[in-house]
Image 1 (cartoon, helix red, strand yellow):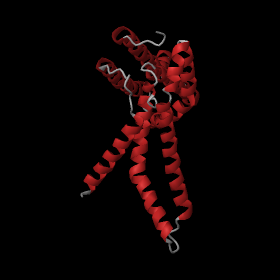
Image 2 (spheres, rainbow, N blue to C red):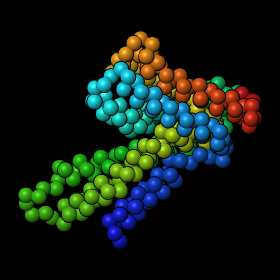
Image 3 (tube, rainbow, N blue to C red):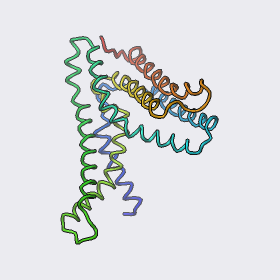
Image 4 (cartoon, one colour):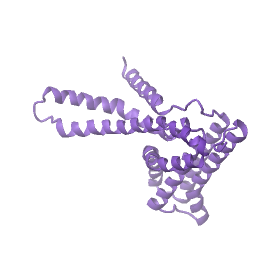
Length: 248
């Protein structure tokens, strides 16, 4: 097998497992291609607006690198923010539901909890293997057989585990840890909560961006407000087009 074929096989294998564990939409998932297209358009327009603001009001080349790193960092920490914030949102979501529906919603929490468990286990295994290998394997002396085994396991973690962890983070953030299996309306609600948590973190960490006040507020609030608007519109379409409600 060629190197490219081997890389492709590794990526396909990691993608297949990540999809099976972290992209289970559930039988009640509402498939609305119009919403998918609007979400994609919002993402593209948001990225274009960010680049336009950088070009217009901050010509520092490091700003491009900061924006790229910021987007990648948000992708990687989104599952951790969900692990912390999602329980509060889900408790409020279930409490808002009629009393006779609450036991049913609680009974469907198994899928998100399993996804969270797999994600934490993945992180623990990858981190544990790499730390153990760094502390144990020493190339300055003769290696015992178990050091060779540990080195091979660490290589597998790097080659297969890293792509899997990246895809797991992507799918966990998008599906909110398979929360649609609890209720179809839960993912948009969690998305709104997540985007505002990130807005607060960015504001407290980096402060306001450069430019006139209207541009500062637009850059800071444009993303969260647009995501919130799309999520509210998605919830409304679920009610009006598909008859999905929480309090019915």
